[in-house]
Structures are given as structure tokens and as C-alpha cells.
Length: 458
Image 1: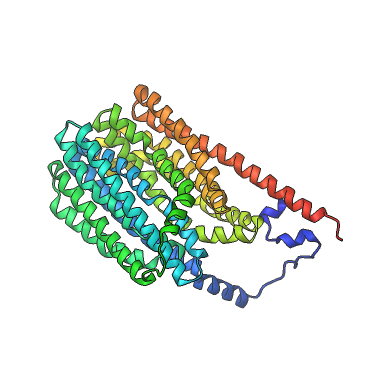
Image 2: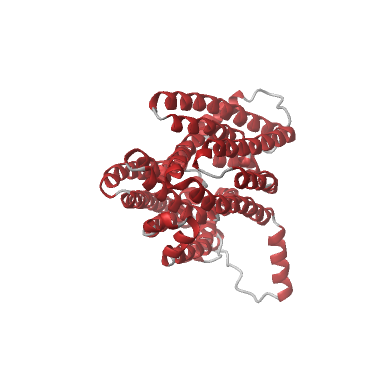
């Protein structure tokens, strides 16, 4: 395993002597740093964090405001509907974030890129129309509560906005500056309007209309910019749309199950438990999710690079992911540990005294957050990037089934604490499946590599 931690190339084992460590001058080191800072990947990481910084700032500004202004019961209803909306949005996105970002890097000509963009746009808008129709029918038939029905209607704007978002394109082209600036220009006024107009739980419907309209406007601006940039394709994008449905299906399934995996606790609580317990669990769940917001942009920015590294060679990709993990895991693990230590103060300060009695949930939710980071590194950065999204989907299916079953059983007996236990058990189960798949992949590549090295020269 020494090869994995060293900087040697695959050619070292073929008899070519590697260059030994040489002392670099300060000038050459500074020049190397300067080149790295100017690289497209570094710029992509910077703007990915800028985009996520806007989302994080809005989340930090709105979460305490909503929990205090709406109260625990109204916030519980809002959190439950937002959680269900996330499932619908993932159906509409249909794996485009990873599949589209990967495919756009493989399209050399402008015509190919135009066909890809239009294919994804048309397909996702069609999916949004179907999903919204089902959404409205289900809530009209399934609920007898007029308040729940009234709040559920404006969430269709959020579903439509997910179809119009073109973040996948900017991730693949490593041009995340554009969505970051758009998000800043739109979401800051949203926060100001929310603070000015929303003063109590009776205005929950108005807030959801404002929230959905903000995301819809952001999606419309992104779509208009990207469609103008690529131009109208000269050929029909129908074949590309079919390829998108077939190729992105495993990633779409894994993305949907990932959202289900993280949100099933809130969903089951909303059905079984009281609105106040649902609201408290959902509010505290936002703490590790907010920490993960810092992790997501880095993974989005480096995913195209992981794809290219694995395309050039399995061991090149593995070395890249290992080094990435050594930098990422201590940072996010340490941040979650600090939050666990000071959980009582954090909960009381951020959410108010109504939520202080649930601070014990932070320990389990933080453990889930750390496992999620590890799962992303193994699943998306290794298996998906190396062309095995089906194995990632299988691991998430296993984790989701266990989480749903565990949630139904444990929530009924232990409430919010049972929900936290269930998501930990499910996440850990999926992670173990991923470890097995990565081990099998590594063993296959090692045997193939050994066969090439030991093959007689003719």
C-alpha cells in the first residue's frame, strides 16, 4: 500500500527509476503555488465556496429567524413540507449535477454542448411538469387540513426552480463565478424582504411564496444565460435526451436516495410524531447540514478533476482521493466535535429556549454528518468518478431501506432520538457496502496491474 501514499507514478513499477527527492528552491516553490492558484480547479474551488458561502449566509440568517418567528409547531409543518419537496426536486434534477457535469467535460465542440444543454433542459422541465401535477393532486386528496394544503401549493415554485437551475453546467465548465454572483444578487434581497414582511406563524404561506419565487428567479436567470451562451443546436437533442435518461438513471437514483436517506427522519416524524418534535429535530438537523454546506462545494469543484484522474489511471485517481481525504476529514470532523462539546450553548443561542431540551440530539446528528462526508469520498469521488455509479446507487439503496425501516421502528418508540439512531445505522450500513465495493475495485485493479508487470517481454 506504500504506492498509495507516495507520489510515485504507475511507471515506477515497470522498471523506470523515479526521480529522487530533490531540494527545491524557494523561487520554484512560490512559482508552483502561483501556478496552482491560477489553475481552473483552484478558481473553481474558490467560486464554489463563494456560492456556498451565500447559501450558508442565508441559512444562518434565516434559520434562527424562522424558528423564533414561526414557533416550533409552524416551523415543524414548514420543515416537513420542505423535506418532501426535496424528494420531488431530486426527481426533477435526475442526476444532472454529476452526470451533466461529467458529460460537458467530454464534449469538445460547441454543437455537442448545445445539444447536451437543450436535452437536459427539455427533459427536466417535462419532469417538473409531471411532478408538480402529481404533487398538487396528492395534497388535494390526501390532506384534510386547509393550512397544510395552503402551504404546500407555493412549494411547486421550488420544484420548478430545480428544473431551471443550470448549476451542473457551471460545475462541469468550472465557471462557478456566475451562479455565485447570481445567488448573491437575488438571495440577499430575499433575506431583507423576509425580515421585513414575516412577523408570525400566520404568514407562513407568504414566506413560502417568497422563498419559491426567489429560487425560481435564480433558475430563470441561469437558464437564460446558459441557453444564450450555447446557442440553438443544429440537430435535434432527442437522442441526447434519451442518453441522459439512460446514463443518468443510476446517479439520479443515488441522489434521490441520498436525500431520502438524510430526510427520512423528518418525514417519519411528521407522520408519526407531533409537529413540535418534528420541528425540533429538523431545526437541530440543520446544524450538521450547515457544516456539510462547506463540504459540498469542494466536492463539486473537484469532481471533474477526480473524473479526469481516474480516466488517466486508477492509481492516479486513488492517490488524488486519498490526499483529498487527509485534508478534508480532520477539518470537518473537528468542527462537528466542537459543536457536540458545546451543544447546549449552541442550541439555546441559535434556536431559542424552546429547543434547548433537544440538544442531546446533536451528538447523533453530528455522527451522521461525519459518516456522510466519508460516504461522499468513497462513493462519488471514487466509484462514480471511476465509472461505477451503479455500485454507488446500490449502497444508497441498502442504506435507505435500513434507514426507513429503522425510522419506523425507532421513531415509534423513541421519537426524535430514535430518528437520529436510525439515520446513523442506515448511513453506516451504506458506508460498509461502499468499503466492500472499493476493496473489490482495488483488488481487481491490483491484479490487472500485477499481470502487466509480470508479463514476459516478447
